[in-house]
Image 1 (cartoon, rainbow, N blue to C red):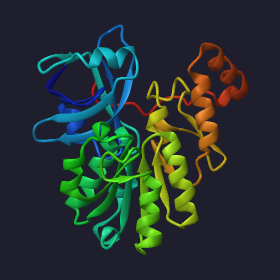
Image 2: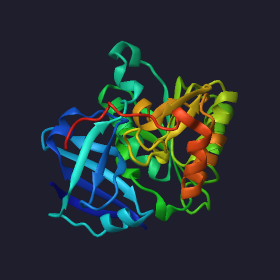
Image 3: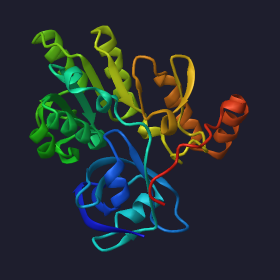
Length: 295
């Protein structure tokens, strides 16, 4: 059992929790995720690690209510427990593998759409701790849905944009990329975009045109989190990959977003899953072997 030591509501249907999980807190790196279960009969839910404190032994997760299990999670409070809290899983951000010399002078642009701010924050904080101040474009449909603005401002230079213009600039995250790179002549060595699939698709389309290498996180399509269900199967450069065991981060210019979005739609129905299994044959499931951590 894993005790919840903090539980707060960030915005409509978005919640933040700190969970006691010392082994995860000691081992995790930015870009990785965990799997939680509210109770024995509940489904497994993969959640990106938003923050971690090795000294306190806590891990911070942020989730949005989208189904029955997350609906149950929203009612958990400080002092309650998760049945399971497994991790860290997935491959860490490629940034964590760079030396101090390689990081020096790097110009990094983060693009965080909606709840995508949660996995962006630990990477921006990690860079800040290593002497790199990145730029972060923080976008959402409306001001009320924006999260982690203050936390991101502490570790990066933040640009705000909302679809309805209720806060910051009015428009899309791509408008801000165009403004920074084309209008202001800014140079970026790398763009890391995390958010809704459609957002990442259009970001990658623009950054490819602007010749900015781009990494995306495919965590939005994960279901089981171990590669066994095959839900997060994605084509990257013509090769079959699975977000949970091969990612969740990939070269955004090589990801087939159209196929991924079509596949997510099909996977939501029993008949659609059967069709995908028939079409994909032996490549339908990713297999396991990369699990570990708390259990």
